[in-house]
Length: 414
Ligand SMILES: [Zn+2]
Image (cartoon, rainbow, N blue to C red; front, side):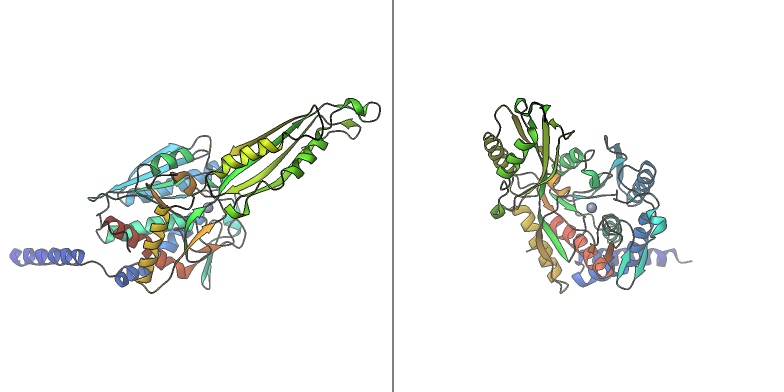
């Protein structure tokens, strides 16, 4: 039948689509689409939570990794995987190219803290306003947030970004030894980095703490405690003295904490110990505090209680901080403005945890701008009570979609 009419219908349909695209989608329309995506989002979370993927669990990590590769490919991403040596599993990188210039990196981890068998014992469930399950918020809810935001953008035919890169790493819960270099390398190739750890309320995080280990080692000389104690140099006594001297290494005004949490020394009650050691947990957000604490510590330990002992003070670097910086704060302002358009408020916060966002942050540079806790709102992380808030799913899907659309247009609202 009338091929002319079919052609006409086709043309008018595509003309309609073009108009619909050209006419900017309203915030309400974006939110409605996000609401319609909620069930699909929950299905994804359920599928991911059903497979235990504790850090280092070869089988579960490989299985979840395989699912993620498939999902990224279905979104049209070009996917590359590389072993996250020395950790178990792969770093999974998916890239979607657009026709614009802004480059986005969306990242989160797919390992959890839970042992094999946990998902079978405590399967995913929805109860009232919450969904429960191992890793449901940290960070499988974050993975689904990334995947379904990209689904929404794809359905909108939106490709005004230069590129969207997704990174899923398998070892965050054990310190990201096999992914930290990949994060740092990729971050430097992007304008914006969104990290999808879960916030405990409707918030985005502009600063996170760095975490270091502070190590103190004392060497003395052993001797019989009964027959020749004066021949010995008591390393435990010297350690005790040093710990008291070093108790105020933190700086509350700068948010730096140094807490001594472990000590070791002595093997037998009748021997003057020749060695002793201690470790402290250091948290900081001001980059210069690493050098300051190291210098102060080294100076303080010069003062000895016992002559002829040796004292070594050093710091083992862990996750660096996402320090308070203009780029992150500007992104938080954009998030606030976009949330305002759907009649909601979102809070910019600094948190005391350390996250992978620290590896993405480049001190002293305005690129990339990094924003943390773009994931789903949840709490009880690392515990049996871990949950995500159902009411946060749609607004936070909207947030990622609106941020990518807004920043791709070079707006950086407000
Ligand atoms: Zn996490």
